[in-house]
Image 1 (tube, rainbow, N blue to C red):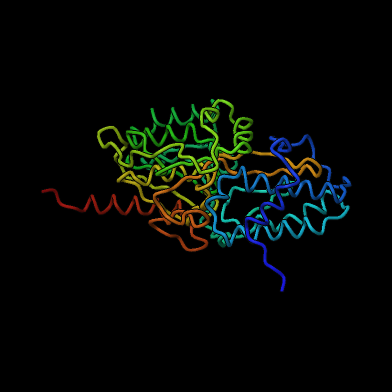
Image 2 (cartoon, helix red, strand yellow; image 1 turned 180 degrees about the vertical axis):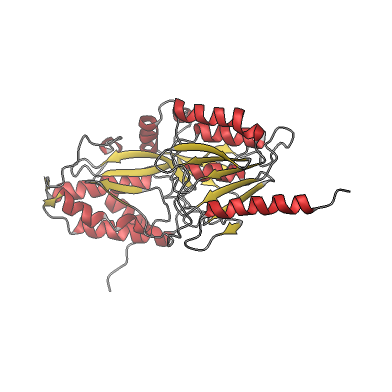
Length: 365
């Protein structure tokens, strides 16, 4: 009877052909799908990919032995059956490897293709973002302030639009709609400040943030964000606590204390979900639409490419423990869930108008 290798044995097999020096942070100048790579090249690239997953990726210590075994078995099969092939043929072999991992951020990218987990939900259509083709748009309708984000950005136009909206539109409004539909994230710097303005204080989106401090992780961290303070963390084989959440309560004396409706769908992810997870602690917030994407537990991505095929691998540097369990891939459940084909914006507008009508019919005491 053939002995079934343990997870540890498969890890040791795959790691033996590479070192930390083989990690190549960043992205290649161009993809070359027809490039010929030898069997030895294939084995080396598999080993480098394994090193990125096992030694650098923050999610590896978190995932179950079952998930690790599936990933490693696929890599061992490719390694043991290595032969001369094109870089594109190698990419095709690697496509299933990450599909078992419950992480919406981790990916392989090559020749304009991106592959990652296959554990996703069926999309529900709850309408398009009011911003349309723009990355941010604002309007006022019947006294309701409306702002739509299709990306979270860190640039002057994005910041100035939010600042002008907060200063000149919000004070005149009776309610607020924030449209996050179709927003896959980006940079959270200014959206975090917007949530702070609306809540009257900074709200944390997580309980704890962990990082890895292996030599491999440190190499990617330093290349991706050299000024983030990674170098001050001592090397360790264990997950290292990086940040702790402290505040989950809005300040009603400084907050925007009028009805707030946030629109989400299955594409609302990453830093857009970070904004959402801050805002749900506001007592006036109602979430409308469909579940968000569920791509917030693992993030702060770093890229590295495989030396021979030049396939880009994106792995998370941060593991966030959230207040909500089983968030990754499942997302945040809306307060008002819209059926497929229903426009969440229309539902939110109707809810606001209904509340106004009820308020006007309530006799004064």
